[in-house]
Length: 86
Image 1 (cartoon, helix red, strand yellow):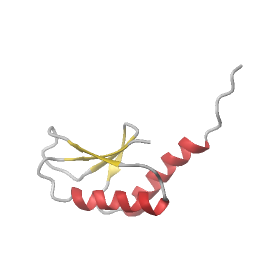
Image 2 (cartoon, helix red, strand yellow):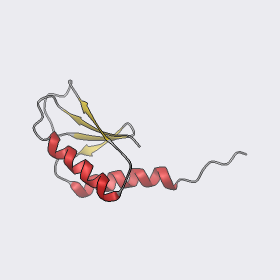
Image 3 (cartoon, helix red, strand yellow):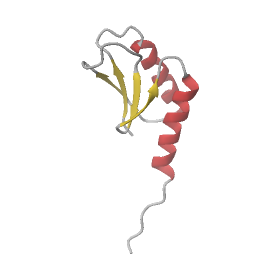
């Protein structure tokens, strides 16, 4: 699973968002690193969470939303049955 934190070049809240992500991942015991991605096209705005290429939502203050998003993606990856050859 790929977890990316997108942030604007002059963003002042990305460190708190990164801490939130890393806290959730550590508490859930998931082996997932957080990748920081500077979005130079974004002038202003809250850091954004992207999981496996899909933008999930803003990360700034909502730890439970972040936990739900990460856990749901992890569950989808680990609980899907393997495709059986026909």
